[in-house]
Image (cartoon, rainbow, N blue to C red):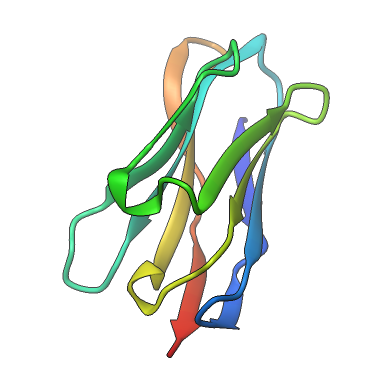
Amino acid sequence: QVQLVESGGGLVQAGGSLRLSCAASGRFKSIHDMAWYRQAPGAQRAMVAHITSGGSANYADSVKGRFTIARDDVKNTVYLQMNSLKPEDTAVYYCKARIDSVMLMDYWGQGTQVSVSS
């Protein structure tokens, strides 16, 4: 059973920083692409940042220059460093990973709330 467990969310003032973590556990052969998504109330879930197994990253325009995605393949963990946070970054953040277990498929974390006050 593969699981993704997120941590690091919370309440922060505008201009502050948070670091989210997402660790994969269970039995699997390899982890391919990993990504962070977010969903604000009344909005659709949208990609924030994505990183390939080779380490290439891309970002939504709204977070470029403020957020950084990174992965540690020894710890099977993906991170999202969020700086210069804005109230509009408030959302539930989800990690997603494409994992080769019984079959190659996408797994999602349970979500972690990030709230930014003005």
